[in-house]
Amino acid sequence: MTQIGNGNARHRVSLPDGTEITLAWAAKTDTGLRREVNEDSFIAQAPIFAVADGMGGHAAGDFASAAVVTRLAEHGGKPVVATADIDASLHRAVQDMSRGAGVTDEGSGTTVTGVALGMISDEPTWIVYNIGDSRVYRLLGGVLEQLTTDHSIVQELVDAGQITREEADTHPHSNVITRAVGFHEAPIPDYRAIAVEPGMRLLVCSDGLTKELTSYGIRHFLVANDRAEKAAAQLVDAALGNGGRDNITVVVIDVLAVARPAASEQSDGGETARA
Image (cartoon, rainbow, N blue to C red; front, side):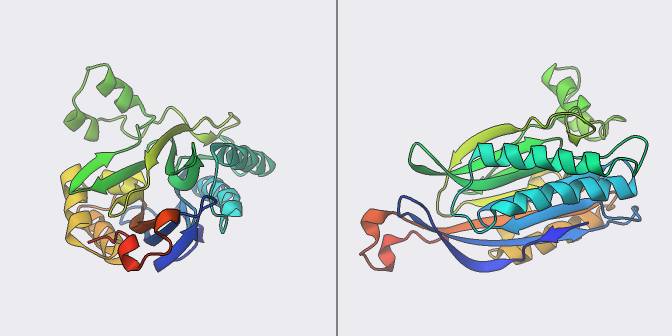
């Protein structure tokens, strides 16, 4: 298990167009109650955030998730990240994994999901990326939305109308994913761009959280806690309280304010703060 970055109560990012975005974030991980080793890794370091859930056996899974977040961390401290940067990091991570061949006969692999600050058509944007069944959620105006689609057998069954979303949560093949980083395959992330809006809260999490909490439970803890640190802690505690069957990792990111260049000479009223 590799942790890169710490929580931050207030961090200002200056984008190339002069926009200033103020963020707060917190990350928390736990081995859970049934696993001996934590194979999850995360990076929480503006402008990039990610959770990776390793697979392939204890040593191999830990190695794979660490390789991914370590490569993504090379973009830490930059103002923005592009999809090409993420693609390059994931390909380098797969190369790193191949040099570690022999950890297990099956090889090593990991999911990865996260968000990164970027610029698209000169607009500040969250770039949401995903491979596997870890997830990104957005809370805005009290509404929780899952921004990623799982790459899993059960998701394909849901999409085909063969099982319901509720049945998927208890399906015997709920752990079988259809896409990963590693296992000698090219990493192919799904990408989605969303606007950076003041007052929004993002959650990046491994399936150790979503196995134990429904979307209603996740929304409850995100709404009930103003501070990212407290929200992250209560989400992990709740997942442990519901069984903690897997490693649990969460990263909570808040957009506290967005100040456009035209408002740079105004007072604090030029920023829209999160309530």
